[in-house]
Amino acid sequence: VRSDWLQYYGHYLYANRAILSYGIHGRRILETLDATRTDDLLTVIHSLRIGAGQATLRLAAGQFGQPGSPAGLIPIGQTHLVGRGGGAAGHLAMIDDQESHIVAAIIGDTQGLTWTIDQQNRMVVTMEPASQPRNVRIIRSHGVGEEHLKSFGDYVARLDRNTRAPDLLEMTH
Image (tube, rainbow, N blue to C red; front, top):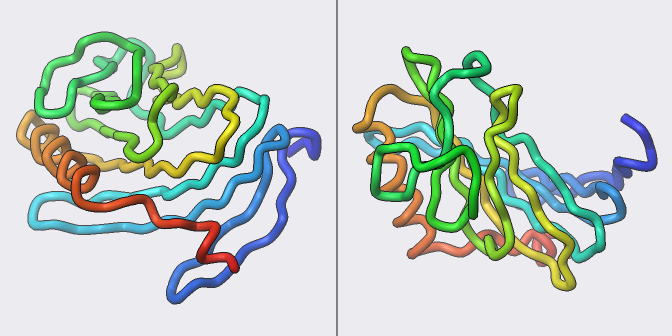
């Protein structure tokens, strides 16, 4: 990776988790990863603290299926696609390969964040320049059928209502 794109600063250990520290286009990022299992879902959660900065960042949050596979955004609580891009708040991003799907959501400081399904069938999050750091969680799951989409949407809504993204900066001091 080119050093003008990515600067790796190291990692921190906090309890039983590792927190990566790096910069992309001059924006400092702290990141940690969790996996959770409920009765009907297995999820992977990336918690990120994205520093303030003038650079627009793009993050591929997942890729699945072939170009042209059903893909797009789904309002949380629903199961039908409403387009291939738009605001991250209140939407799931989904790609289906006719047998199963991956689905993702972003919660936390989501103002100004957008989802796009690109031509390579990647779920891309765009983060515009920001004057303040933001804390977000990107949650992903793999499953089959509308029931999985509904369960995932319900899980994301509960998580968003009841918990805050961990303060990764506090965990590194």
